[in-house]
Image (cartoon, rainbow, N blue to C red; front, side, top):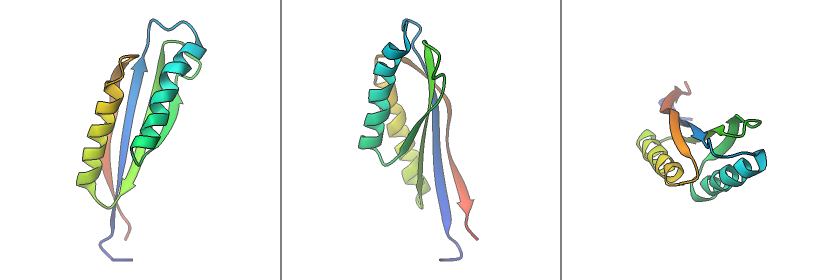
Length: 104
């Protein structure tokens, strides 16, 4: 492995707000298609992080790893646009960052 090997890790965390939703089944029907499409459309891992038992909100997390930090920044911007393009919920981004890990 090269001595100057840097790894970039991207993290995107968003709270999805749906105050009009009255059941967990209804909320799951709005959130699950978005999380599944993210995994198909982008080279990312997606997790439902919090709010799983709440009717009106949920927190999702998206992560990716690469040797190219600029590409990851662009990826996070595209992920954010994709999530915000959904009219089924309001999006509040809690965190969107690319962190550098030095593997030396």
